[in-house]
Length: 246
Image (cartoon, rainbow, N blue to C red; front, side):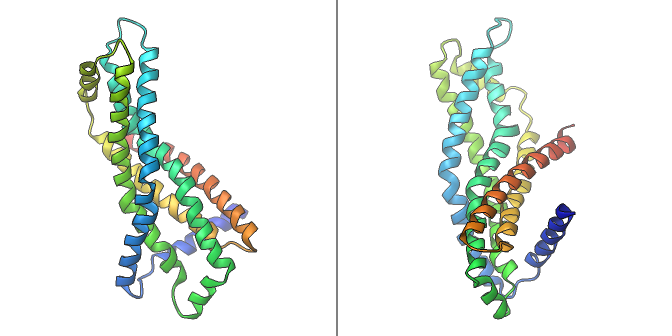
């Protein structure tokens, strides 16, 4: 019953979030600010993680391809498909759930315990829409771009790791990158990223918006927000994969 209670309250909050805004110009400005805070500020960690993921995938694949009957260009193909299908969307999404999700939950939670949200409501402002709507729209716009950057950086990381693998040539790696390329994989990754972006922002916002108590409870709710966001990302990863790829 507690689960149904949280689902119902979450749906009610989202209905308030997507009500028609009072002043659209204010929301547009807030969306740009949130794109910088939640998206551009995460670019560094996305690049670092993607680079090393691509490099490690390439090296591990090369290590396991000991059979001389297996063509070496499959190493490049494996790196490409791993980054496109899973790592650039799901793994990066999990990382952002920790970084962005905890930030959102703690920011809104702090506003709740210091009664800033109550002050917005007294002034007649839809606090749910004002605080949460720009964050959701910002991540829906910027996160797919981060995913595309992650794909390119991961493949580039795999390219640089080629120079540490004696049996693999650059020509084989690039041939594998081009071999049997299915562009639908990119669409699949973008669809997943959009769903994950909504989860990464809305779930932590819910936990922050309804926090009760003081700073200790804000910390607990931030942790819970990251945990449940990660679980939902993994769940919807399986659902979307089942729908789009099978």
